[in-house]
Amino acid sequence: MLSFESDYNNGAHPQVLKKLVETNDLQSLTYGFDQWSESARDKIRKAAEAPDADIFFLNGGTQTNMTVIDGCIQSHEAVIAPETGHVSIHEASAIEFTGHKVITLPHHNGKMRAADLENYMQWFVNDQSRDHLAQPGMVYITYPTEFGTIYTKSEIEEIYNICKHYELKLFIDGARLGYGLMVDGSDVTLPWLSKYCDVFYIGGTKVGALCGEAVVFPRGNAPKHFFNIVKRHGALSAKGRTIGVQFDALFTDGLYFSIAKHAIEMAMRLKKTLQAKGYQFFIDSPSNQQFVVLPNDKVKLLGERVEFTIWEPYDENSKVCRFVTSWATTDEQMAELESYL
Image (cartoon, rainbow, N blue to C red; front, side, top):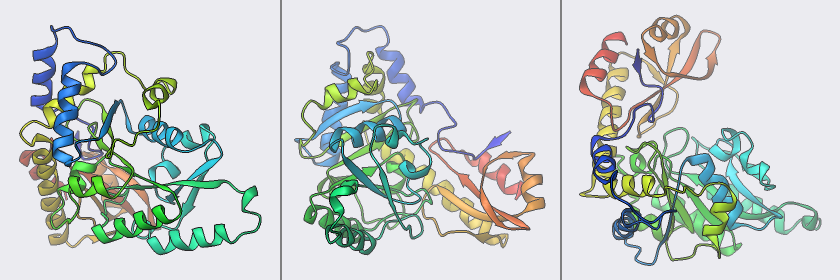
């Protein structure tokens, strides 16, 4: 079965596997204090132009979101997110499980608008009963969003300035960060991002690794005892090297960015094919997630040959479907999908 269901339906990039095999028989320190994890941290700091960054390696996205949010805000504080944010809907109430309320704001093609954040904070500070409410402590956005859209520099900067004004931390979920950075025309770079948020993570699971996310506190601003916080959440890998080795490979010779660019090229090829065949797009996504409206009979027929996601109903006769390319998508797979469309 041809699969365009997600960008983590493959194993790992061959260079990542090669590095794991090459280092397999070597002994090292544990819990992420090994030489490859240290090397990966140095390479990420260089790529991000953030020499003082604190970097921690965790296993997966939900685990990372839960650990970062719970570790960065106080027990009585809440996190503000767009209503389509991953922590809002797709993480089985993991954030609420830690005791933190998720305050949702309207989304606009998956994005939070600075004006909505400002309006909410104005309402909050002027509410005389605010001491009875969950206190905002952090803002959470994703790059790219769950709809494949991306923020511009100015949009992130506006949100960050509001965060600083109200003493909120800005956390950017980068589970698909590589794909967002490599979008044609994107004005956001890794060094720039490091200057306009308090914490972000570099997704490996969806961008060439078997598993793993690199949490970056770009100015050495990790909360006190964050290593202990990671441990407390069950997120500390005894064999931390397994993630460190992978990021060491991904950040050697720009591999992370080149394989992410490949996924974008495949997505744009798919987009052109869908346009040429006259399909309607649900949203204009420039990244590796493409959302298209398909008639119900086409959904059924295509589903016999291709794995994809039925995102939501569009009307009684059609559905919104998501197709995702990845670092591993091949020309042959694209040609086969095009023949079915």
